Length: 222
Image (cartoon, rainbow, N blue to C red; front, side, top):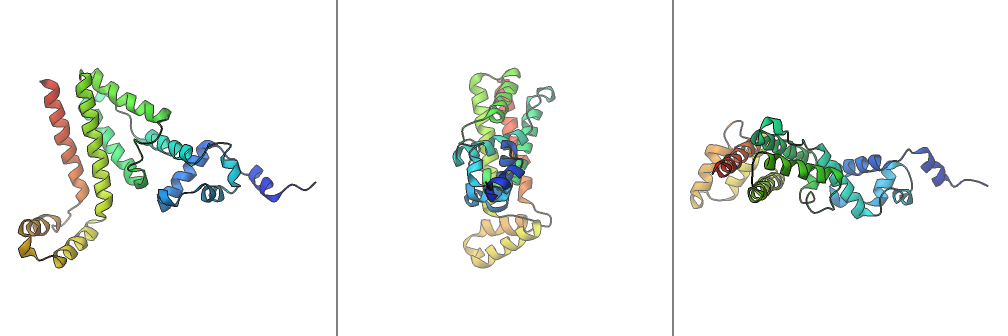
């Protein structure tokens, strides 16, 4: 009895949940989360769609696994560095992950958490508690830091700032579109700051992060 070609193909492909998640992340990185489908994923893997369901229950389960995989890419805080340095390094790592996977912004905290997500959250909370933060201040710190990290990543993506040259071109186009005399402060900000050589919107990230960390440090000492 002849074996259906599709079944033969699927036996030749060494599938695992890890491989499926990595491939799905690669697809989302290239085309955005909206372009990801179970059919497209199975085609990328070289097999039939039904084989995916041996590893993931449905697309929601797939997305849960993808986000959990991304959490495993984020550096866990290292308490030995001191809470402030540990939170700073974690925030820098998190921004780097979101920059590599911009489709994940808005997805990170809405998916059903997996082991890597839970381990990450536990490490952040544990680092703050071990440093003497109260439960209330720990909650404030976690919320303030993540709101800033996710918010900055979202704004950076939506502003479409790329290289300094691209940013300069956007700023010039903006000035040409709106009369500067009607918006003098905005025009001055654009000309004297954004259009200056080497301007990179991303440089704003660490300054804002340090302001938050300094504020939390002050609250911690009170």
